[in-house]
Length: 147
Image (cartoon, rainbow, N blue to C red; front, side, top):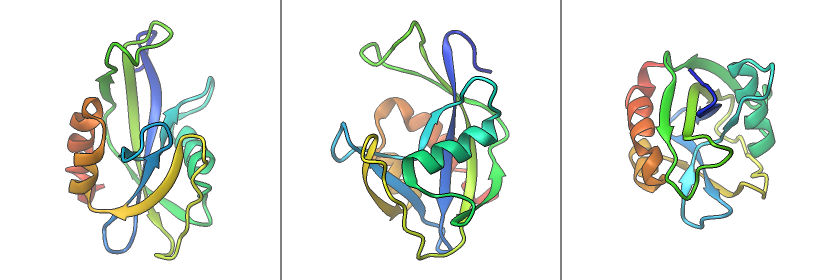
């Protein structure tokens, strides 16, 4: 799905036993929350990219979370004009679902992209995420219970 116009990436959705999801506040835009996400490196498969991004941005790994599902399709969104870079129009992403091995799991935001974290209801996150990402979040998280 990714090509020269859309950056290939992953999104990690971490859930606790209450069905809440782990969300992070962006360092560059206070009060803007999102899920861990990032690009897939050259030669890396999507699931490996999801694990790497989760570790880099939150400090969480296989001892903390278990991979339990994957959204079956790529999601695609375009960046607004002010965000576009390197000739790319947006991102094509694969979404992966993880369950926390314990409700006491404590992520450590990387301080670069994220500065804070919390458990959230899906609806709250969708209202907080930047507008151009909302359609993807609604599409995937609306089916999160089925993953």
